Image (cartoon, rainbow, N blue to C red):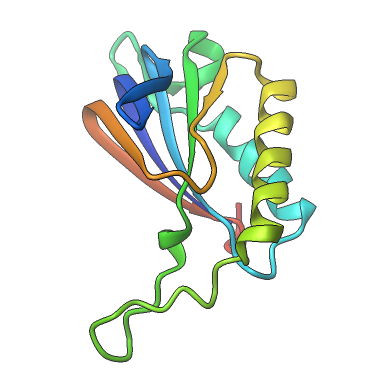
Length: 149
């Protein structure tokens, strides 16, 4: 799994011009699912998301986690995080989990995030979504469950 994490002052997701999810201060997380991902990959990403110290405390810029600050999470499925652009100009998405498997994997990921931290919202898997956000920092971090987390 890959997660692109942005610290935000606010973020929202709209589908067909209707807002379906929004948060105030917290983390917007774009989530890519690899074809070979397992439940262990989900666990690694969730654990790291909740512990990453991306929020300030006094003079320390990176001292508190989303849990410590009681902020929110907004999860958005993003299969394009596994785009392969090495050959030609059209990206290949063959490394991404096929949609029929990915929808279940993503929905389980969202459920597990909500169980671990109830202040979690989600976009709509497979929908054409419009994301609005105010990035605070800007702070953007990339996690990959295949790397040492």
